[in-house]
Length: 194
View (cartoon, one colour):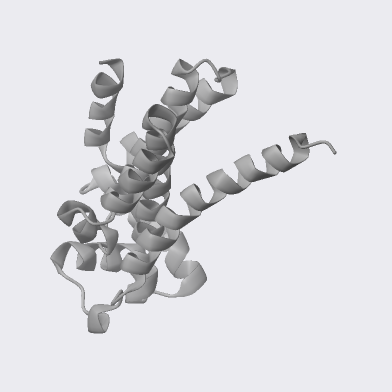
């Protein structure tokens, strides 16, 4: 009997829970109490107010004030158009962004230090106080964290010799989108260089 397919399937199953567990864990923590009795704080109220405007009004506003969050406001405008302007729709992109960041941290940890270290890192990320704060915040920071995780994972892929030109393009695109979400995210470039 050929055991190669069994080994290949067990490797796939071994990776799937590593990716799935931090995602589900972070998602569960983020969804718990997400609406906060439908209340928002000042910066979230700005997102909520701007994202409810028309695309033309958002562009006009960006020409005068708050251009740093332009891409995020346009993204949230699209989310509100699809799902309505509720507090769940306001915060759900952040929950999903942090869940993606947790998966990236777990995978980077797995590649660099082994399965246990990766799983521990992915689960621990969602417990950090700063992550807990941004996990349920209707602002772009969790999406930037997801982008930082994705770009770092792509860089690790390239540095381990598994990368191709498409990985470099993905890296550049991810860093560019993060820069449009928050220009301070470009500070990841010196960190990656180091």
